[in-house]
Image (cartoon, rainbow, N blue to C red; front, side):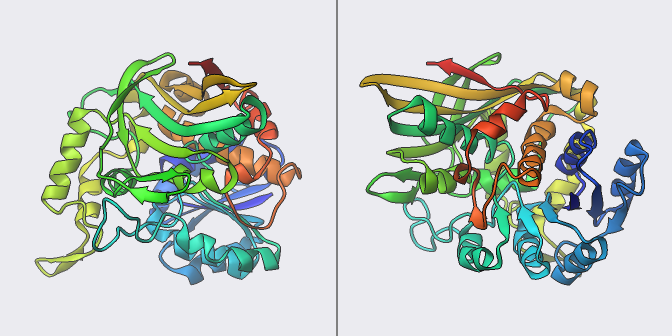
Length: 400
């Protein structure tokens, strides 16, 4: 398999590092606007033919198409901030390559009732083109990271094996990771974090469909395996837009453990307009305030040696089995030190990356087949979950 990897940040590096161990991965083109960063990653692998480096401006569809044709890639892997999703998605379709991402095309809040009704939903742009992809026999596998991705696979597994009737699928994410030497340092892309945390969260309910609520709403305390109790709140996330398409549930939610300090910083950024992704004039220069915030903070890809702790991602399912009430949490815990020792990548990005490589594996070997725009729930979950331990990310199932 030949892959064009668009974006060689923290998650992109982790994808390449995990895929390096797989002999069936023939070539991964490390394409990034920051060529120095891509070269830094390539140098760690010591195999320039298998990991060539290319300059790429992901905002230019023609450049993406050119690299895909130059290397004759089978799949384009989107590993950049989702603001570029449309160009990368359309480029894959144009050149006849399969496509995969870990976050879908961006949403736009409802202009009048943003905390009640969705406007443009996550992935709407992609799902609107599903029939075109299907006619061409191409697969666009959207939302295959850890959340979304692994969590969606867990939801499908729960439907297939653990429940007769599902009342709620609730994605719950928490961590106890600390970063030494920084008063504030996100362990994931601050650009993406701002997007998903400050947009109106989406909830799905049977008979009502998708609706929105206020950011950070409905706080609850969830007891995470190996971590303990963490307060989590509603956040906009792809699982809520994906799960109901293939899993029959009465309610679908996503809640994330952010912490009071993190929420306070995000609210301040929003109050000052620093979350804006549209460019403004600053002394004759056109800059996006959100890009300035990202530039001021440390790169999450280089924080691994300063991080300590674990992160837990999983799917809490409530319903009935054999006429009895049941609650189950399917989860994966990643330890930062273990991830650094094995792949040289911090836990949050490594946990996000492994699902993508398993997805390549299943497509390459015919265990996941399909055409069109599909989420992880559209495929049988068992092959994916069987590979998790092999890839170093074993899952757990906890009766609640």
